[in-house]
Length: 508
Image (cartoon, rainbow, N blue to C red):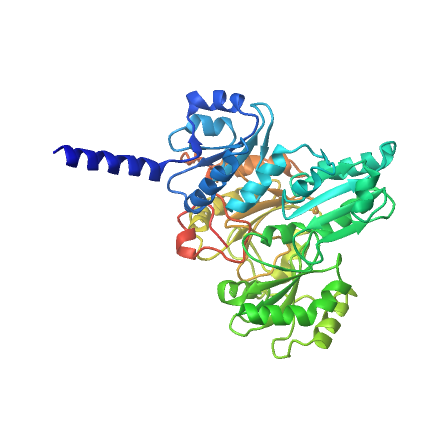
């Protein structure tokens, strides 16, 4: 019996070790004290049923273990149990991640949801915007991340230091920044003050900036030098490319060998267009469906396309043609010169509008949505999206109310099937609702409230030019809060439609 007892205790101990977590689960009565007691905390607000939360869990655990030795704490809050705490912190989707430096200094987590990205982001958050670097600490500082940026300046050169600090403050979430006033160290690194060196673990290893020290020029150089000449496009890098502000050229191929071969072939083009067009390879076996988003065939590889990310325009290279250096060079040069027309996928323009909601297609988008005389509320939907179907009767009611009101010629309630029509917006999930106010079409406002008729009316009234408010004809049943499972950043690898429908915000 004693032996059995010992075995049982051993199994319990093993189970305890197996379930031990470096992520601290917080509740309303422990949250404030925990945040006050730790200088830096990353908190995840989640729901147990949330698919994206489940996918994040092992990555979050791994990051917590890695960051433990650096005294950076990771915590989680179950919003199905701690409703009041989650509402207090403005949680509207799952998972929501926030960075806490005390209770009064809170910001959104802006990194990717992978262990390495979480670790990298939080280490950067733990550093000052600019760290002092010496001959004894430089080599260690270079290992802080895949890309680190160091300025070498004279101690008396305040103007250069201030320009560099301004860039560091702006990009501190992206890269660790360091500064050295040691002239001998600068010389050992092959530069003379003032200079900026981008150290990286890819391509040529480092890039040097020695031009005039102006914040805008340094920032442009840093972002260009920190981007791989021909990188890999996938879930961990996609949003970085989308936010880079440059067109993105995709090289689709099904094998690593083929991607490498084509990359080497097109390398001279990427070098010539550095800072103008970003280039990346994408695994056509894993993410071939993304080719369809670029108006390419999804069963014919290798393939090449350019996306103008700012306008979400697509420029597919003819898949019947061979990918050669000469052909792609001509295509890219013509694109940069504005000689290539974007490929536009569009349903036919409706012969007449049926129903209260105005149907928009790609070919009518500019005429309707960008009509500068009208406030236009538009829903970007997908035919398979369950939440779009649930919204439909409310959205019809909303459109009917405005159609019968004094604002019928000033407010348009519209919808577009974003799976069948190219739209200039980068849509991250369905349904997405945006208001394009009259006179401010370049400043659309994204709706994030509860999907009730009353709340949508308030949104139009508060954000539209005409402050158009209408009254509901009958009281609407109360709706659930808007807290939803967030769509991922329109990654090339989206979830299946069936899985997406479990969320309150369906995946692309």
